[in-house]
Image (cartoon, rainbow, N blue to C red):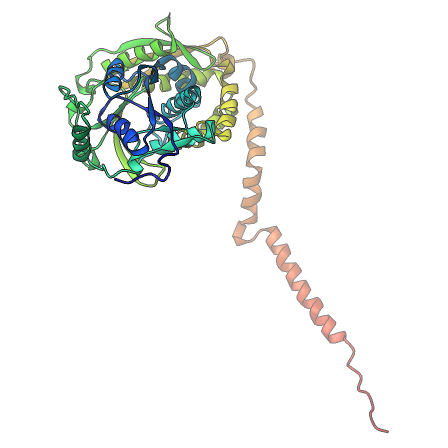
Length: 446
């Protein structure tokens, strides 16, 4: 096993700890390799598992009670990370709603804060050297504390297989719990989504089995009757479901329940990782799929055309910044300020129908609506003179008209004039040659 160059220099480290096999091995490995004091941090971001067992396991592995931090971050996750991201209608590569990507800066923020609180030299994470998460954790950490040290065991040790991890755990006395119905896939879950990677998914042509999906029924087995739902918005963020006002986390939990019931939000995607390789993953984002549709619907009546188009044009760049780990970058913050400005009038309600994997918008209303039926009607009106459109079209077509005339018969008036000028230049040159006096010959005879 490799020994780090910084061994002995690290006195105290904060580990992002889940209580699973990988991070439990890392916990012991840090003490064995660095000889440092380990502090554990476990975040509840809605992954659907009890976090208290992580405390008990850390205690069994020798961590002092005062060095175990467990925090419920569900409200902060939705309010300060998910909602701001969805104000931009953010999707990566046309499909991915960034469920894993947006959770990493939140976890990193608290890792760095705890490190400062306890006087730790470093933080540690369990991300592998192949994935995006290592980049997200570390870029965020350096942005928040440029002097922090980061330990990434997967880039240092030789425990590169599950068998080796299990052997290390056995030798170190780490208890390994065998869970019933444990998925064979590598999964990541939070209030926004659950993801699946590995196993048969490593073949992009292999269809995942139905039993893999955990949050949603198959659209084929979803109810045969559509369900109506009304989502309320204030300043670009969701605040209510069916007129019931909810906290950010409760709001998202309710959307997940509705979406899962109707088979909404499944995605099978091959994405381009920031580190350079392609990766296939499957995702369930039931609440996010409903919310994105609803948010775009309320924006459709409250945003000015150019506002909406500008947002759409910067969204892919904004999505890349989040996916690649630049949440705390000045460019993301600058884009966020612009996006948030557009949301000041995005309030109202959107009415939807959910049916067998589909989200259908059937109505939207807002006190700030820019939709004016007096102008849009197909019936007779008294506010819009249709003759005005002729001048509008003529002015916008002017460049086409000029270009078209320039191409007539392969050369326009401008082309003929240019050709004439060239002919005249040749004639003038010939005239100069003809009228130029002969060079005199000097008489050298004496």
